[in-house]
Image: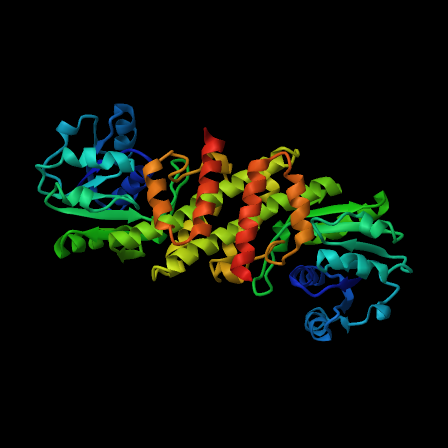
Amino acid sequence: MKIVLLGSGNVATHLASALKTAGEEIVQVFSPSLINAKLLAEKVNAEPVDDLSKINKLADLYIISVKDDAIAKVAGSLKTIDGLVVHTSGTTDINVLSSILKNAGVFYPLQTFSKSKVVNFAVIPLCLEATDAKHLEILKVLARKISHKVYEMGGEKRKVLHLAAVFACNFTNHLYSLANQILIANDLDFDIIRPLIAETADKILIDLPENVQTGPAVRSDESTIEKHLTMLADLPELQEIYQTLSSSIKLSHK
Amino acid sequence: MKIVLLGSGNVATHLASALKTAGEEIVQVFSPSLINAKLLAEKVNAEPVDDLSKINKLADLYIISVKDDAIAKVAGSLKTIDGLVVHTSGTTDINVLSSILKNAGVFYPLQTFSKSKVVNFAVIPLCLEATDAKHLEILKVLARKISHKVYEMGGEKRKVLHLAAVFACNFTNHLYSLANQILIANDLDFDIIRPLIAETADKILIDLPENVQTGPAVRSDESTIEKHLTMLADLPELQEIYQTLSSSIKLSHK
């Protein structure tokens, strides 16, 4: 399968490596920044391109992996193409592609990617959608080469999944960051809290989070909650978050 | 070392096992519920006790591992004791013990415990405090038998650590739970999001969370944020949390 990758960000980078490792041929990598295109293209032995008019017209699959608000523009440059065009976004409707292209689909990996960190693609859920059964099957065959977790999923459910991911991943990471802010302000190192974070995530791999909630709020330990709010008096933003989440925990467990 | 354990909850249970495994002798387990005292005492070959007046007066160490607001009451029953008395709380001042007991200390394990889940005590930070150097040394020697991460730490820092832990662990787990609430409402299984949670925690084991923040808020992707808030229209509590945390992410990364 000849694949053109449009994008050079975190998702594009990890997806390119996984596809290359699975034996697929990445013919081109496009980025408006030639430096970024080259950086990724070199890794997967592809041609770097920084001009949408130079995109190879004869590939089998075009993967658009750019910021959500840039997908339509990139797709617009692929109007004359016969191959299948997919995006990798959790929130963007398939119609953004299918309204202007012959063959469209979605190839959404539910994971958080950072360029510096290697991920095991085999366990990443891949959520697939396509405008017809034939192309859905093509995507499934490809997806199964790089992951054990392949889901066929319409746009509405995919968007719900993306929303849930914001809570479980983006907001969670920010809470780690706020914890670090509290530690730094008191000359404590983030390292001391890493085992706790690891165990918190580890627990829900074998149980549901609502079954293993701990802490002052779930115990309705108002005395500790009051002490903590007092400690956060100089950090009103963290105080508000503490109050909002504690109320929510109490509400969920009452 | 002869140890009396006062408490039979999650912390007491895991600590008892770790101490027993390290070759320490748990002579008694106290709980106001005899059933609970027996349950834990049997595991570590100790005598179960449900009456504070029957506590063995000749042990070397008394570990009070009960709810914060019950520590003072339990400590009050140990006034005539010569041995060292410690509590395992992150928030309670050592004075609650030292004001009424001869030899007092703190033995705080920074971890989240659930009875059903085995933990590796060796990586759990143990934060120690004592009223004098001799007893601090006794606690250090004991702590190093069960963990590689032993910290001497005053009450103020310990309380800060506990507060940071609420953000990094308790609130985080609740966000997993809210994600599940969103998934359940749309017939999606929590299993699909587990790899994402594992990777989110895994990333910060080798980096700081502020360096690996992803998601719509850090990208200032207002279009996606608006879509998500609309999707949460029927869940005003989650909508508020979404807004509060997104604002906080933007503020931290601007």
